[in-house]
Length: 172
Image (tube, rainbow, N blue to C red):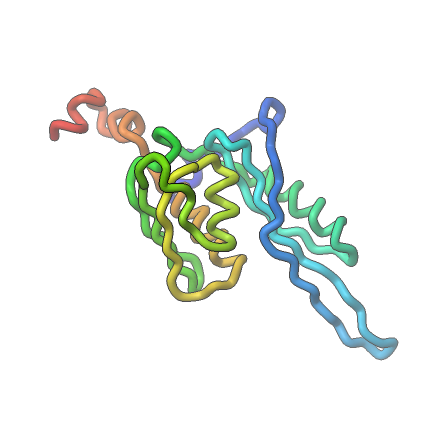
């Protein structure tokens, strides 16, 4: 899988901004009554090609969000961006969620819904077309979008993997 190659090792020099994607309230019924807890899925990104997601669970919303941010900072990847969009179209799946992201011309904007929009805007994409099929579960959508972004490769990465020049990648 492509994720291991794109991992970001250090978070010290990054200016990460967090975005809350979804909060889920869970009720546990016990002998003493109902116990509420919260799970929050959070996306962090620097807007320049680094993004991560995390899940936090706690008995309070703020604690769940804080835990989600900490988990997201441990799960960062570097995404190749090309003039505010992605280098090529990509299809990815996670669970029941299937996502398709496609590069768009300048001025298009982020044409994506819900959980996909949060991930794409956090990574710094300004122009992209996206479609989600199947499950609309925010957890699976975030993970499927994350998988799609992790599999993206720019011309320099392809040339390096093949051991040829960047010009030869476009000719061949």
